[in-house]
Length: 111
Image (cartoon, rainbow, N blue to C red):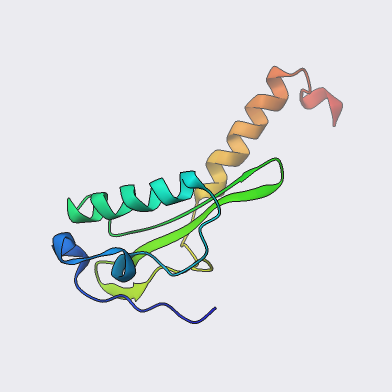
């Protein structure tokens, strides 16, 4: 796919249309088409700057959409392969998994 270009200003969402805000990629389902319309409305109301959504059902992609820009100070457009700074997100996931293991009976005695 070719790199996306974002035209206009996300802070002025009413000036945007689907071709300016949504990354040009195939629509995989009716749900994705509805999601894209929702994203455009959220941008028009200044609720989002940029977003990426991907969902699978039964092993098949049903949603794969990117819209907007990377940040208020980074006007590059979101793309399907945009990276996110995750920093310390894994700490919460690791803690949650540890709690789940203890709840299911797999305690520290099993090490």
